[in-house]
Length: 486
Image (cartoon, rainbow, N blue to C red; front, side, top):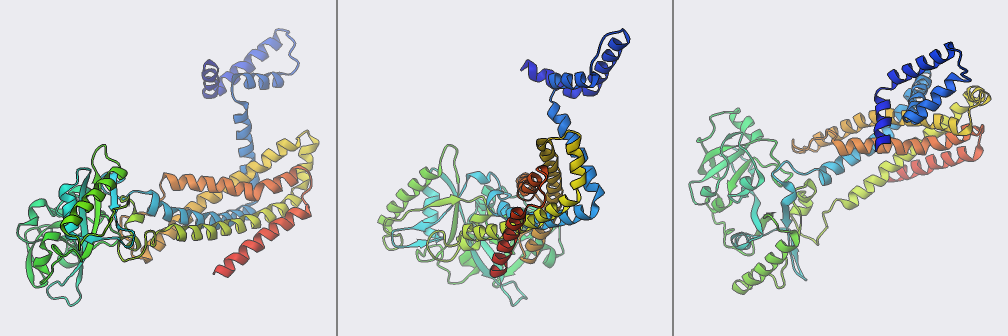
């Protein structure tokens, strides 16, 4: 540890200590002392005091920057190739990050679970309201809340509006704050009918009226009081932001003849739950299985035999996609993994093709640098030193390409989200994971396109036929696969 801090002290005070050493050597020489090689002594001292490899790395980076600056045409062409190859990979990973890795903007997303119904013969992604209400009342491991999609006609409009009927604890459990007025509360279950507006609907139909709370709106011909406005940044646990929210207990008021609150065949409730402190998904699933068995004794026609309630993390965008939240099918029919796997394979092929092109370009450039490399060998540079310098140039080039690819990937992802009418909370801006992926992709690319040409140049064999053929085969193979898929 003392050695580490001593070297760290030298690193932080390197210029002053080097100057003091040079002064001491000069003083010793003036006093008649014999100093065989002051430069060699200073190098040995740097090695003993600090990390000499940091100095050498700095030298390599500066030389690489000067070399690339002398060939702006080559540098721009190489960076453009890498920006395309790395950029599409960053865009694909950015989408994966948004959908799978980045939690929803709700309270404590890591404690949320989404539940499905399953038995040996049947599967459904939603359940009837009476079953959900029974679980909500008796569960000791979860705070259960639910939503269902409805259509309500606004007075004066022919086209129905999308509305979500939610349990009274929906907004509380997800930590939503109103933009104006208030949101649906537990008292609204049995109180006067209320409705909550989305921010886009509020702006387009009510000109962002700050005093909107308390005014009356007619839905399906029934009057309801506007309680407040939900901000556009609130995601809920759905990708499709509705225009309106109502309390689920008030659905029969708005929809004549609705038996949703009592009908066990009306499987419309998309059920989520928040784990109570100290509970785990396994404990919650076991409790719901026992509750389902108990409820079946009371309603054998409405609850399936041997019904279980499997769960998955509910605080991520991948769990709120339409393919996993509604419709029928076996578990996993709407999962993203097959799509992500195919996209990953395609974008990796694009990166391989770009690296193959750039590797061939580096080999061709090596012929033009033959005189420079021969001079460096003549003055004592070994193969290892040449390899390190050439590979450093490739790494610098790859990092420039990764930076350009990061900007390109952000632009592509932003465009794709805009044309698919994605919710505003799906932010394409790169986070720490995306930036780390860009750096890793850049370094991997530098190995793919830079290491083999560097080895050939360091060995003074830039015309290696086998390497050029291998790079050409990689380009053709990747391009053919991409062309066939396209």
